[in-house]
Image (cartoon, rainbow, N blue to C red; front, top):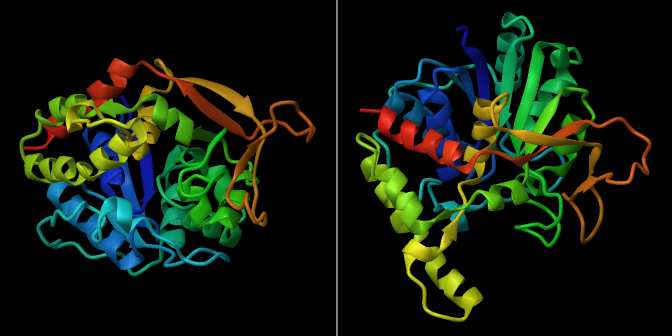
Length: 320
């Protein structure tokens, strides 16, 4: 079986790391490039993490640095969630590999062109690199078979009232990508929340890790900060085992790996708000057809939860 060539555009990031593990461990996919952007932490931090993960996991691919800031809006990060280094404080062995001299957008275009229209792009952070590639190379879209993205929200936000973090981080870039004509499968905030883990479930899945166990143990240790948040929300004492946690970016990887198997989607025309004082970064779904436009997004709505869990269980056990 010919493997699906994949480029992962990301801002690692705890959940980015899990998604990378899943795609690296799968027999369906072959990672051709990891490109980095601003997001969970700054570009230097995400690139350092990507290079270290590539070497630690033994992935044979290029790593290329992308955008250090959004196209227009101010730079933001999520270090309060992912820790100051993006990996919950865990330090991987220093990388031997170095980033490509070419910037991410040039690498993305070159590799997509070489793949003869079979390249899949998985976007796990703000969409700046993808948008810049589209803008620099107007024919980029004909070389990309599909984009699988973690981002957007059909109903509520997480880093603002209405916007999901990745899109809020660069709404103008999201708008460019949505308007590109490239087929898109969206794993949005609600989809991630629908496939969250109990702390006990995550511990069981991570218990299968060998080489990755110290890193994943640190992830769980870092996740204990959410116990206080969960207790405040529930109004009662709680343990880590019973709290719910979501590894958002892994759901986008699951969409790719389970597409054609158990993934169910719904088609919508979606736009991204770039200017609203309260709605900047909101993804607006045209449920009633008011815009009169053909759908530009396949929204992930259902998958087999056990198959999803097993993808992560298999991935963390894969590396020795």
